[in-house]
Length: 443
Image 1: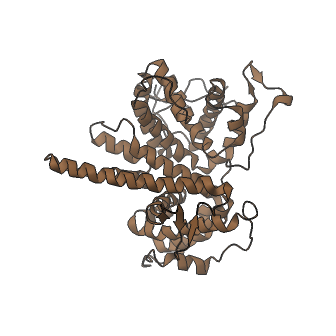
Image 2: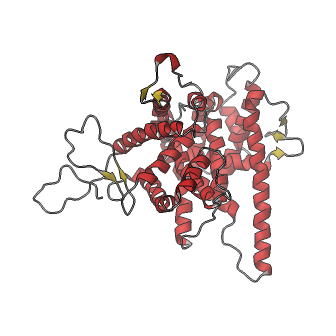
Image 3: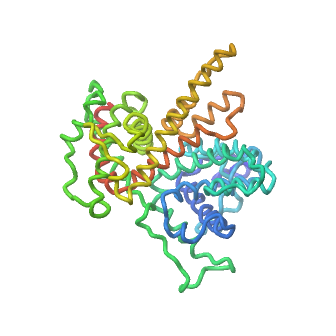
């Protein structure tokens, strides 16, 4: 279905589609998000305790489920999304409108492209495999035996799009309301009774206060540095940051005793940002053109850098800028899951690098060409450019992609850790100052 332009004349020839506003698409997405979370609750894919906890992973699982249910409902070719009627404008809108390539705002085009490519794959699955796909999206094991190996790759791409959606401030500010709507819905046909209601814990990973002041700060500082400013070597960056941005004066960040550990991890990651900017110079203009994307990509790539260069795997420790280690045993209990995931990412990255080398050796021994891009290089490019990079690569490769979607899954894993870490108050307090420096260096 082609989108309808409400202002088009009925007698002046064919109606031309007009580009929808980002606000209209966001409203529609959040309307579907509420119904998707409620549906997942009814199908026992998400339980009440998980919804009320508002854990960071829900910021990704929720949008991925929304994309999944939208794919099941899609009836057009090429795929498009019917927009729900707004309660404010339903009386004035006489015809339904679909979100399609013709009217999609540029900010959402890459998301729509990846989603529409997945729609026929999802719709062609038998019902039991469609349900397994929903379970995998929710980090549950599939029920079918043997499992369908294609589902992992599909779920990874849906979660990759969801990960990028979750970075948006407009999404973060409204997500708690979608969770609460799902909690309040009673499977018997209405809102649950007041005595049974659980509330979303809004302080636990739902609202990430990143973008509004951050965008203004970076734009001003970026424009304030001369374009001839030379990049500062990554090895000097931690000392520059320390001189300009002394440690926060308040000793407690999350709870008594946690501050030194989280500050250690934070400063180690921020020190790696200089190396990240050197290795990926395309991040520099991104600091100006799309600060939220630049921040998230930089932190994700810094996580990968630290996990592969600053981890003592034998002692399960992170080695800081000055060679000081923080062992897992010394890490406060509340932070151990994050630190453990950082170590596991490093282990997985090492294994992936070994597999890439083995694949290259095997290709040469069999007289074949070595792949132009290793799996690890794909991971880095996905983190840098977003899920649209993998979609473009697959399209250029004749539509062939790994069934398991390992590169996308691993990039998602790194991105999800970045979401959880940057949600911590310790990171939020420091990020504006850090990116004042980076914006100047990046110019």
